[in-house]
Amino acid sequence: MESDLVKEEVSIAQSISGSDEIEELIKNLEDQCKISEKSGNFLEADKIYQRILELKKQGQIKKREILIARQKTEVSDIELAYQEEIKLHNSQWQEKLTLFKQSCKEAEDQLVQKQKTEYETNKILQEESTPIIPKHSPELLNLKRIQDTLVRNKEYKEAYFVQQQMLELEGKLKSTWGLDREAKIQQNLAQIVKKQENEMASFKQKILSGAEELKKMRNAEYESLIKKYQNLRKELVITQKLEQNRFEGKHTTGCGTMNIDLNQSSRAMFRTPMSSRPATAIGDRSLITSVSIKNLSSP
Image (cartoon, rainbow, N blue to C red; front, side, top):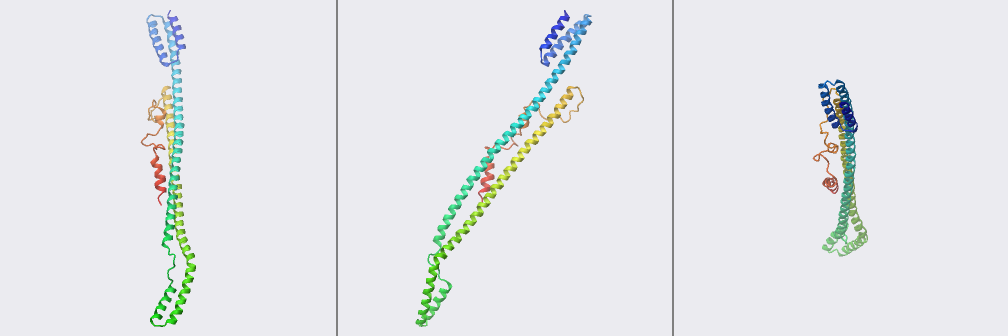
């Protein structure tokens, strides 16, 4: 009867898959083995004992399968978390760069409008401040002094000749003043244009510097993600090897074990804490603005 009971336990063992069920079955068989031993039925006790050994072997195999499966899942979870982090990193930085370009375009439009207004204002100012009638030249002023002296000395004939010279000289000055006046205005406006060109060149250089700064930030964050992944992967390999050694009964010192909870999600283990993690593109709007508007729109 007890032999039939063993056969029934074997049938049950073949139908179960979990290590907990096998442990429960072994416990039941051990109780039966003690009963057979006490009753002097040693052959039956031996059959039960052999079955216990077989079940323990199956249990170890099952536990190892569970261990290997769990460790594969841990590796897969970290790989998946890493890929998700890279995808998130790329998405966030794409948004940051788009925001940076928008900020640069807005700042450039503002600068162009400012320069246009500045040019038009200065053009009007030059037109208003540059005399339409030419100022007396030193030569004309000298002739005027000579004429006044001749008049005081009653030398009217000589004063008349000097007066004619003055009229002739004034005619020449008036005939060329229009061109001179326009040349002077254009010269002053050209200086303004040159200053504005330098201002725009400086502005675009700051755009390049800002873009380079963002590129360095992006690369630094990317390198940090890779390094974190590599460290986690390395620590996981060490931890899993120690687990396997402990399972197989090999001596382990416990050194180099992973300083994280294996029950914690791999994504939570992988991701940088929020306090040290770079903000998202939306949350990082002030950073992008500072790189662009503050640094770009200043002269």
